[in-house]
Image (cartoon, rainbow, N blue to C red; front, top):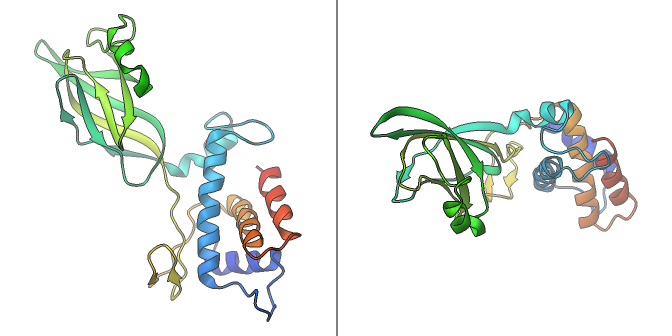
Length: 232
């Protein structure tokens, strides 16, 4: 969907399409509200807080709607004594999995099964015979801390290669010649939303409720919120 269509639809639902009063919606407000609405919509779908309680990959619709955000990136791992670590990607939104290949002096590279664990349980996990890293069983765990992914080896192996599969932040739209509120720089190109048109319609409703709240429009605010949630 073109940004011009998004702008028209948003102004129509906020009842400001032909308004000449002080509540005219500027282009940067459209950009900011739509981009904020994208993130709110994504987080809600991943968490599953909706009427039918469907979350990340729990239905065909969720898989279809969110697959555009799933991406893979190589991790540049640094080996430490009991773990290896790599930086979380800058556009990271939510964890999916980590693929790790491990090597040992006696064996060739082996694909490990990696579980995401809680940093608070680290000491217990390293001592637990059934949960601690094991090259023989090709299992280990990882934690997230300080924007780093720590893959624990317990001195049994080294990480030779690692990839992180994650949900990234949705691409922000930009309207040409409009000042981007995120960078305070005038946009030189049009950047369109990467979502399907039916999802964009839901995000527009979400953006309507955001702007309605900003300009204290009590009628449009609940309408936008209810439509965005009811049609998930």
